[in-house]
Amino acid sequence: MDGSLGHVTEVLSGDYYQPLSTSSPHQIWSAAMVVSPLLRGMMGLETDARNRRITFAPHVPYDWNSFGIENVKVAGCTVDIDYRRTLDAITLEAKSQTSSQCTLDFSPSLNLRAQVLSAELNHRHITFDVVKNTVDQHVSVKFSLASGTNTLQIRVRNDFGLMLDPALPPLGSQSEGLRIVSEQWSSGLDELQLDLAGRPGHTYGLGVWNPAVLGQVQGASFEKAGSEGARILIPFSGNPTDDYAHAKVTLHFTGKARAEAPERQDH
Image (cartoon, rainbow, N blue to C red; front, side, top):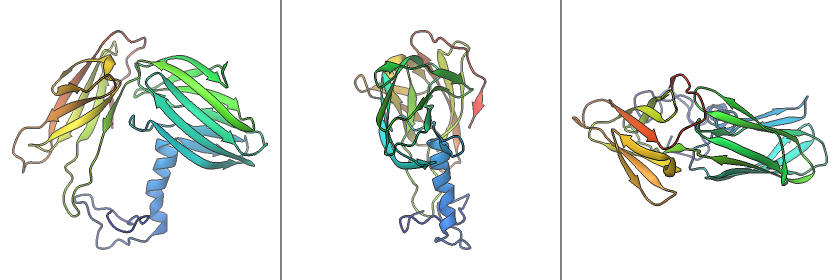
């Protein structure tokens, strides 16, 4: 909530952007509902002291092209992690500050259409596994950390993602942001249907990562801005005073994917 930085209110209102009158804004343990989903969920960061292992399986937004995590500690090991993503590669730098031996399991998420071409650790090929689920796929690389800098590069092709830039509503008002209700792939992974919800009278935008793989868009307008930028604009018609309305948007991709379609996944 708006207020002192670092303070998370104890109870959130489900109807309006405001704390409840019975909540306390200074409950330190309430920050766990922000910190835990960020580290364990979005970053996929876990430590296993018994097996001297760090797991890093990020599900970060596609506009997070680079970030770092410092002082990850497990069983005497201290590691700084630096993550970078481009259209054709994901690069991980893991700097071990100690001589203690530990293992890093790096498993970043990719779009289901993406193809993993190779993986190299310090310029030498290393084996990898690709694990798919109904939402995305993860390329998993496990290796022992040497003292100093360990550089892992995973080369990919045809990765794709959508980017939502949320904005907080005015304090005390109802939400007006776009909601992605569900997504469903076609059997050949050449179409992706989105079920979206938004306020009537509003037009929302979704950023596009790697628009070169996207052909046409139905139910919305597709605006390209160079080879590395594009936006999908979704208008919602109706009375602005009405509640959320639903819209269907279908994305048509170019080329063929080398994968089977997943089942429907609701969010």
